[in-house]
Structures are given as structure tokens and as C-alpha cells.
Image 1: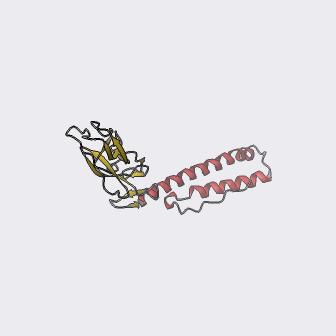
Image 2: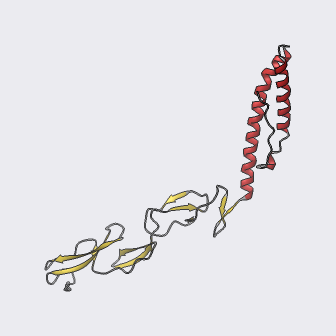
Image 3: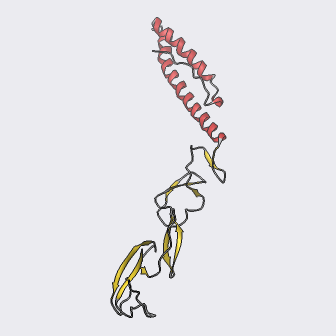
Length: 197
């Protein structure tokens, strides 16, 4: 391939073939290379240069700006996690990820960033377990009360069968056992067994 010379305005001094390096007109990202026939007095196509980029490294991309190539970080298509609140983002632009975002995924909703890795926040995990236990305890107590009320009505009105009296006693014992459940021991709770209907 014969080299073409260009004048100070970028026009070919004679016709020939030039190796052209193309880049994206918006991002400057390197797109590829081609050999182009350039007529005399014509410049190379837009968004291209005669300057060759270097070798590409994994996770980096060449970008042409201000008349030169620079090797930039490229994390596009990857998910990053906020070290503040675990919110996720998908990287869509060339360059480093935003500050306070890391590629390492947290292992649980209770993980906190310690500056180099995710570590579990035992207090937050315990509090969540206690909250869940208190919620479950309230639901179980409500179920017991909803079952006891009509049984108690039957007994009070002397309309209860022997089976209903037995059920009432079993459900009242169950409700007492529920009130004694210590939610602060969550998640290690042995829930009392609800009576069978």
C-alpha cells in the first residue's frame, strides 16, 4: 500500500489508498479499520483518523478525542451495586463506574460495604428476624382469637358440644403458649403447635 500525503487542510496531495481508523461520532469509541481509496484533493471520511490505536486490553476501549487515542475503562453491560444502599445500575457509557458503586454483588440484603468487601450487618439481620417473628406471632394470636371467640360463645350459651369444649381448651392453651414466645430469640423460635380442627 502506497502512503498518501495530505496537506495542512487534510486533503490528499495525490490519489491513493489510505488505512483509515474509524470511531463513533458521539462517543469517540474505536469502531474498526479499513483501507480507503482517497482521490486527489479529498480528505478522509468524517469520524476517522490516520492515527492507529494501540492494542486493546480486556475491560478497556480506545476513544479518539482531541486528535489522539486514549484507552478508557469499559464496563458497559455490567451490573454495579451501590455501597450505600445496594441499589443496582447497569453501566451504559464508556468510563469508570460511578463513585460508591462496585461490581461485587452483596450476598444478602443485610450486607454493608466495609471499604473492600461486603460484610453482613448482624444487628440489622437480627432486627429483621425479630420483626418477622413479632409479625408472625401477631398473626398466630389473631388466628387463635378468631377460633376461640365462637367456641367461647357456644360454651357461654351452653350450646357447646363436647368436641367444641375440647377445642376451646386446646386453643386457649395454644394462645397462652403463643404469648410466652420470646421474639427476641429469632430466628431460633420453636413455635407451639396449633390444635388440629
